[in-house]
Length: 394
Image (cartoon, rainbow, N blue to C red):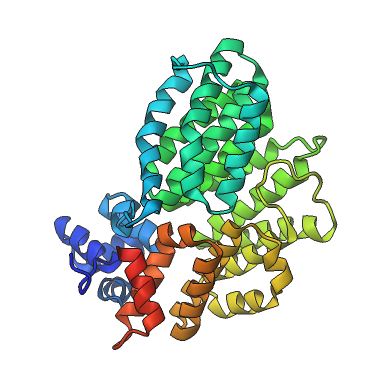
């Protein structure tokens, strides 16, 4: 595929549909969208939303990553992030039986600090650096877990594996995300800490959401919320984070009432000051709650409400968020602006997003979809859009 005619979500949907022997009407009926919506996505006139891609992929029996064209391979140093994937697959085997290390493992306190560093790198959207550190940390923690069988070590290993879930999810390796989730759940069970399982469910929900599995994701989140121990110092952080995640899953599943109910639970915790200790870096903060409000509105298709909520978020609140969350919000709002036909503003938000978290923009499917849409609707490309498009497709 040449740079002049790059592949798009719409073209991939059309190819997969034809392979299945379906008309646009047939796909529309299976995916619960109108024929005109399917036609609009295939032609590039409509933005392919995550909800549409999930529904279309499920209806066509393909992985959503195939529709998105993931994993994205880019020229330059950042492409080394994919080198971690085979290593993570090897590591998963060793979490079950313990690895044979080529040298002595690092001390547990050192490895605990490494787990925290990797989590911070992921929150900073520095995927390449996180990927370079993660496999050896999982290997060494697997060694200590089987050597000592201490709950603390199993808990650390589960946290490291959840970082692997986040990395593979962001890069588009859905099967690896599911496999890492199973290992994270197994190790969390040996941590003798119910909250470790709550965190695994919190990590599992986006993976299920991408697979069009909204009701199973919500049932698991409901169970997770019930398992939060209110006497623990991290209880409010976890309960709030689970409620925010349930709000987004509900919204993308078009369950508007449930979405705003879950959002209200999280918002009330923030308003009343019931935040508690921030232990797990799941970002249950006023800033993250605010951007989730805009995201809920956007997922429900209320783009005007999303814009109003976005405008109420001050620069200070946005600046308080880690780059990954800040960048994600800018990508979301760029998509909403593009859907509303505000193409110049959408491009500006994408440029802000790229400045905030370049690796997240380069690997995020919604960024790719939105840029492709901006290209499709323009007769001539502004130079900033042309350069951004080139960075994403090369």
